[in-house]
Image (cartoon, rainbow, N blue to C red; front, side, top):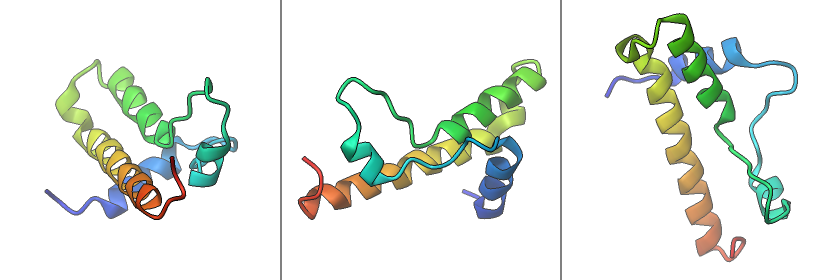
Length: 89
């Protein structure tokens, strides 16, 4: 896989609105049980926007989907670490 660190940062910067930000693990732990929180909402939003702008040609948006996949991977690693440390039930 290519190094997409720069690409991921560019995708996040281009798709963020003033209200967009990453959900912290603390916020996730303190949320109400029925509330859905997606820590990778910015990447997801950017992926769908790319699809909309490119007539749903998925191959054009591969960088966006890779950034989303990497975000989810990092989030799951953070949750796993928190669970092992006893911070997550």
